[in-house]
Length: 380
Image 1 (cartoon, rainbow, N blue to C red):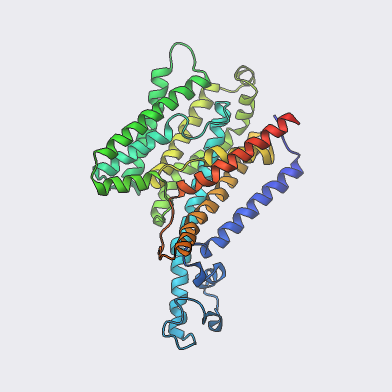
Image 2: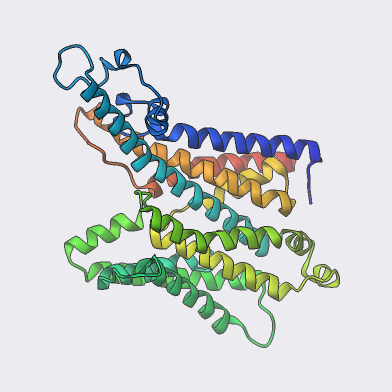
């Protein structure tokens, strides 16, 4: 098990935190129509700091009467617009991307540790597919109620994910304990079954529901209300804390199950609690954002190359990198449509690409580069 010295770990962790903070600070100025105002204008509007009206004359949507100067009313309109778009639309997207990225990356790293498989992700046991199927059923049946601030779609997603996990353990577990490969095979099989059921539900739905379903299955980080973001945290924070608490036991588990047991680690409890926590967190993400791939696959490998395989270090760094990775991908989802509109000379408005498309476009070549880097290290 490779590790870093304390000094190198502190330096790299600090760089990750600084990088993430910079992304969050800049995010209110990133997105469609970004030429109208930047991140500094958004922060000035939000904090009530003065803005020089003479610098806004050439900005779009500011000098509305075209008289070559910015009046007090026009300046007030610019401030209101910058505050609304910057902190009513873009900043919430960034906070949501941060939460989702942290969750998927930490859960992906946990599954790769538990199953000793570099391809393991939150989709491995069919968790994401089961959550997607549960959420899709809620959409198809028109369940729109809120329970304690949690949407019925999120509750259905958690129920579907939990049922898949239970099914895997009930139908595959016999008189002996499951091996990691058997769990992987069972999870992949259940995931394929859920995918088939989702295609069936989509095929028997009308055009409106089909379009909404297909769009949702591509993943989305469209802004949700502050209440919904807060209601998502109780499904995510326990996983973050629980996985960090169990990181020392995971280090022992990586050395072998028998050795871990001799050192006081209850392997069954470790596996069960980890899977339940990851199920809860992944279902929360799927319920609100749809399935978002590649984050849980690519980011843990990036973290291993950066800080080594000590779980006490790997998990928090993977979370930070996951949050930053998804924030950057969300920027790509917003800016790509603007670039496409500029190339085709079409007005695309505020349209954005589904985040799942961007994570795939970025994740595939990045994973191949990481794979080549790891092979190079092994041969060296």
